[in-house]
Image (cartoon, rainbow, N blue to C red; front, side, top):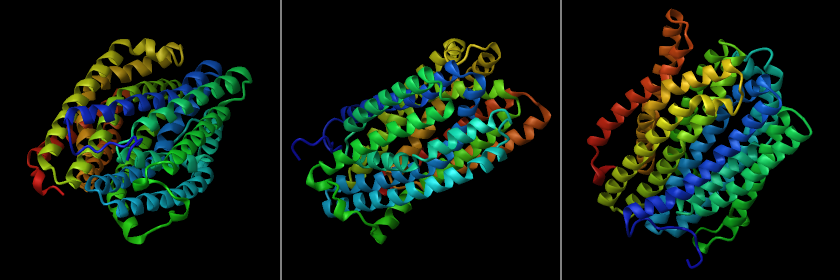
Length: 446
């Protein structure tokens, strides 16, 4: 496997393996967040409040549509990493080609659903009337690129499963730069509107997925993509879905709750939508260590359990949790202290800044709880226990969160009631995960 960027995590230093894998993911996610934030920054500064609100009102709905398939990609990656760790190369190749074939089907299906369902779903969310036309335009153009978004996540999932987090980083840097340049030219230069922001994102995403597929076509024989081998194997697809569907449903469950939250925020008007939308972009940076370490832990745990190295898996889990919670809290403190200035970068309207800063001051002190929950979800997915985080998220991040807001907002019609839903549900899920983790027997978890 000379010249390969893959990493076998079953031997050598635990902390070096996790950090070596996680840091490219961190930088990759940083550029991904810049990629996502560029639309809001440029739209908010060049077009105004209504356009920023349109982009913001679409974000939770976009994650609902894309998040399900992202979860399936993560679950598929668990299967691939398990075969890679066990050195079962025939099954490894079969799992990779089935994943690619299924991703193509999912991407095409999502295109039709996203484009045709946009107006109905946005209206159901209670999107403000003055924002709705721009929201529909942004949403529809964005989802014309569904095939690229889905295939990118499936391709990156394969690369990360064999320990290659370097190439996805390079491709994200390239696509992020293209996205920002196109935004500046089309919106800042030609003043084309919010549709141009979605178009720039789609173009850059197609470029990144092409780069990923080229890398897979040039990979070592053990996991090289072959066009002729792309097909659905029913037994392998069953394995992929057994691991991926719970993760996909988990993402969708969270997204459904967030769409409900967004619908409640919409009731407070355009300024609230713009301010909270700006904060959500900033909050995305707080998720960076959470995302990169939870993905690193999924791959590390999956490979080591595949090799039956249970104690090594346990030590890696503890190290990952400690790093993630510490970094997430440090970022939370930073956002808390500088929230007004950070929000003002998107839009300097005082009311917009006030809404965004209020949400930041409510939530950021509790980022360590969010980190712990996501780490535990990543660990359990890597161990093939995707149903556990799905059930926990369903109960607390969906049912409880929605019920809490529905009841409390009637008695206390204050937007801070909505903001407090997040720390409250993060706390409850963390408590349940902690109890489950303390009872885990690592030699029986698979």
